[in-house]
Image 1 (cartoon, rainbow, N blue to C red):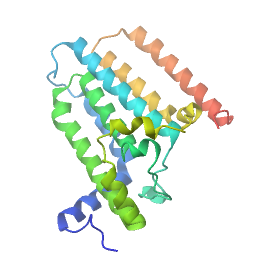
Image 2 (tube, rainbow, N blue to C red; image 1 turned 90 degrees about the horizontal axis):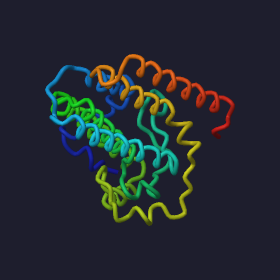
Image 3 (cartoon, one colour; image 1 turned 180 degrees about the vertical axis):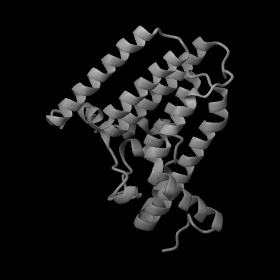
Image 4 (cartoon, one colour; image 1 turned 135 degrees about the horizontal axis):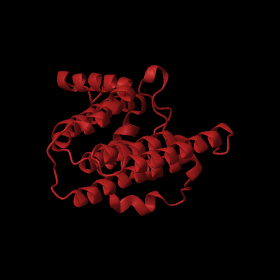
Length: 237
């Protein structure tokens, strides 16, 4: 079966690049969070407005990731961190958007960029981050088409890659059961990183005192250890 996603040299390069980014994403993507601390001109002069918008996007990203994991979680990675899929999941939140986890990640990083109020980050690093996800999505589409053929092609034509179909949300969640324990089990590492990132931005910008930062960070560590202990004792299964 011919692959409609790799019909030109350019498309093939994007797919190969996407496969490579997917393979190293766990090492590469944290660098974008480090870039938040590069000195820059503000993107919004009113820091209060930046906080509201930034926290709104961060909250939306966390919510989308949590809903995705709590309902239907697609395992990604596989051996040697390669793209794979045992099944083609098209129901639930995946009938609203084909890549809800990626949408959540993009909203999160945009929110952190606005919270940090970094013009440099939003003009340079954030577009690069989005391009990397574009390449990953193209690589995944090529894989899914090769494996599932017309079944995936039909799904791709019905549901957009990132732009959610808000009119389909009600029907998508009918009969779904949200498992909050699964969210904690899968997301506690990420949540710790997100909340620690907020504290680091605040202390870097001298918006909280060192004492407040230390107390808040200790509380985060204790919560992290508690969830990790519950996971170890299989209380989140």
